[in-house]
Amino acid sequence: MAIRFSEPVNAIKHSDTGDILKLIAQPDMISFAGGLPAEESFPAEQIRKATELVLQSDSGKALQYGPSLGYDPLRESIANRMNRMVKTNFTKDNILITCGSQQGLDMLCRLFCNKGDTVVVEKPSYLGAITAFNLSQVNYVEIPGDGKGMIMSELKKALDTHDVRLIYIVTDFQNPTGITWSRERREEFMALVDEYEVPVIEDNPYGELRYEGEYLPSLNSFDTKGLVCSLGTFSKTFAPGMRLGWIAANPLFIEKCDLLKQNMDLSTAPFTQRICAAWLENFDFDAHVQEIKNLYKSRRDAMLSAIDEFFPKEVQHTYPEGGLFIWCTLPEYMKSRHILQQCIEQKVAFVPGEAFFTSEGNTNFFRLNYSCNNEEVIRVGIRRIADVLKAILK
Image: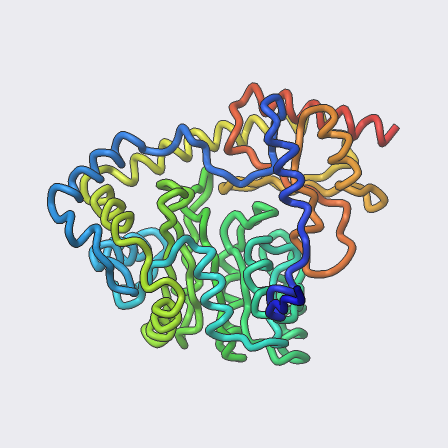
């Protein structure tokens, strides 16, 4: 049969991520590859009680179709928390509920971009955003950073030479590098954005997971023209299986996204939205987040300590103030994918870095996750990677 598939589907490249995940699923494998939150952090008993409250109070509405914008009390809770945490000035009219932030990435790229349009991303950038944007068949310009955010001279050059339709960035504890943009860089960035009037996606899945230093304001607080669309999620602070995220943006963008939402899935599940809203109303979200932060900080510190003790000096790494990831840089002649194969033989795994770039090359990086293993396992796993690295560097 000569079945013809669409251009976006035909353009999807095979990824070996699935093959890696199969290998690391072995029960004796220590995996630093995923970006999964720790299962012991999920408030399962509280979710059970919140579910009972929802079913007892209004089971009909909870199990019925719901509005495409989302459940109003949940939208209000999100707006209020953003106003407190990242210094925004939102109401529920600035919030649309999505099926995880991944849907928000897909939706916002469709909102602003046609096939062949140019999207600016960080170098490196979040793999999930790249794969979502690829479905819209866009082109990319990568902007390198210096540890404090994008290099503004490089961004200005790109804005001067390309018809940029969208900029995508992660300002807090970036995936994959763990880097956080400085306050000054955020202000400089928004000055350029306002000058060139380009829409921005500020993805913020990890912003609440800060282990040291001060919380920094969202780009929205520097936005004078309503160009910033902030993405948030409950996947890292509540439970990823609930599939709850949101877009926070000016009401015009929210209205347009609502039209897309109506034609995508009608609405995010009203049942899970109401459970989340009931949980937020009846339990202490701040205390829960603090427990998660204490857990992950200890694991981050254990990984950094083990890296400093065991890794050869030729391997550099970032120092994240929060989030879930550490980014490692190898000497340029080394290839992380080849090292991964040897590490898998030693029952330890990570993610090779080249998947986080839209350009070719970039083979001497890898990403480590510290949220899913306890301190003892982290130390053992890092030592195994170090043994492989030392053997190669002899």
